[in-house]
Image 1 (tube, one colour):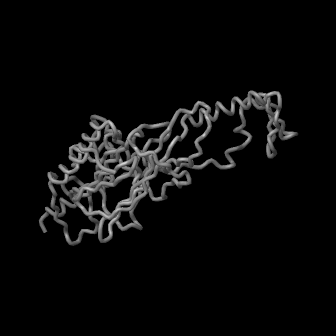
Image 2 (cartoon, helix red, strand yellow):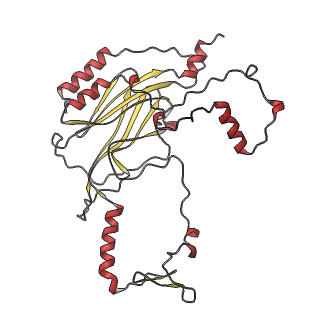
Length: 336
């Protein structure tokens, strides 16, 4: 499949006109950092080929996922509060005793250069392929889904995290574009994409399209799972009249419940229960998956080169450039 003319011209212009930054690296540098810029776009159904896509696909997230952090969405430090005051408040709230005898004055303390954190989104003015996004926005047959740039250390495949990618419109807890990409290095840079593009429609009780369930990405911080101890008598509904002698609830909306046994069915409430079940299903799943395509590819790459990955319904433009984080830049410029 070919580029549209405007998109192709934008990519060619980026290839010819982009400056190729050269960064020096120290011999004792253990990790090489790179700036990654990723642009993912979709082709509208009218322009996509009418192919029959398999439904027996596996969608899953690996265990070692990494999220991109957006500093603009993080809470700012309260105005009028100095860093020293915050440190003092945190120390006091921790309950640990403070000792003024071991305090270090500002003049005696060596300056500590903060470590630049990886996987933090960089500002838009750090992007190099914005012209391609402009061309995509002008093309009615295309639509951008995800465009971001960040810096990260490049590791071997066994240690490389899978970066969570989500983009496009949101439908409940999901987005059109979801999945991960993994960047690693051996002799060359390597990209592995495990992305899927889903089309959703509102659930009004129609038949299911029988696509596999789409998983939710792992939580950044693991949550405590619900255990059987949480399902105690104290957690029964307040309108349940529980009989300890029979081990049975004497009625919740016409349905009898029995602990440790199967639910007893009340024919008088059959119609209402069936309707409630349908309504609950629609409430739990307000959207149905109508279509899924998967982009699972591996590509060997070189730095400072613009790469394009084609697909009948998706497209990826990616560029990886050497990058020197601020703390390494300070080490290089400091006198020996």
